[in-house]
Length: 484
Image 1 (cartoon, helix red, strand yellow):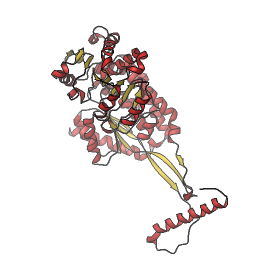
Image 2: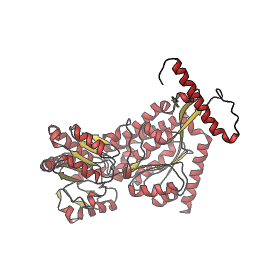
Image 3: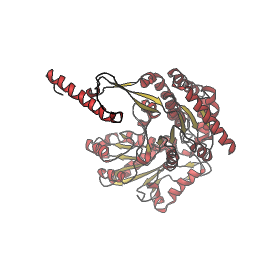
Image 4: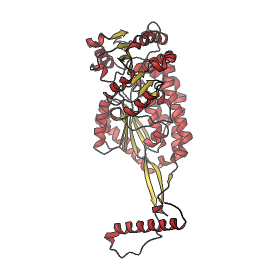
């Protein structure tokens, strides 16, 4: 442990010195580093896919869609847009302050700590890293020990491509994270659970360090059968993909539970069952297309959720578990009790509760009884229902008639609210996430008053000067026959 403390202190000292040297403020340096990330991913596609398969059982197609492809796109957007992002933004000051000028410049925070997650260990490490570099920071990345092969790849490969005096990677578990959080950082970016997010925030508070917390929550999906019945097959495929198609439901934005009117629930279930079969075959365990559960502890947690007798009684499909193979079968529940544990914590696994309501409008009331989710999905063409969802609920995002695609869109901010997170990133929002917007005002020594006030009354003099200017410009406008 002492050796790790020394390693952390030495790494932190070196990246602080690098930032102080001013090297990372160069746009040329930033683009070169982001370009190196792009080349690293392209050069090592097979190694990355192999690591993701070993850690999480991800099929190579899933790995490219959710991890490699996302990083490549983020890097491309950042390189192509950085010149525009970094340009100072000139502000139109009120006439009262003429002839002063104002602008806002984006400056890097300094030394950033990125704490990555295990479920998307490549994209959730490199995507925020791209944003931090684009903003001109130095970075220490702590990869997740629960994805050991992906973590080892990052620790070994990043130094071969990036500036090792500005970007560091450290491996380790909670003990290493504890050491890191004892130090002062200029910004902390964390992806993980609300439980750990509270620990991160408490540690950051000791140094008043700004944080971005990308957490999770129970993301509901409303199915308004009345208005989307003609497209119900597409709806079912998208729900199935959003529940089981991305890391076996171990994603913060995956579909957590479905809300539907009681009269349509059985038909939805009847359509979901063959859809699961079409995705994963007769035996999903042997399909090679369903990601495995991360650890035995996670399997045991999901098993505990299902072992509640009231929840067991609600199983209408699946439910089998193989702890040794880290497998939980795609499972459907019909109306598990709303006060059960599975309906009050993020499932983070391949279990889909379907909650029935008398009228689909009642779904809004159920959503409002739970903490604010990272995403709300709603399949509906009812404009009144859409308006109610937007005006009566709070969430990180709302997506109508699809699931999870908002995460892939660099033009929109991604982030939570309340227990689902603090802050936002992706695209330009990543640059903003890791930048401080500094206000710059350049005054003029002209148009001053020769006031006979002592120095301690300069504050009063400022207001006299401003009042004089205001009256002066009003007079000019009146003379010109203009209204103010």
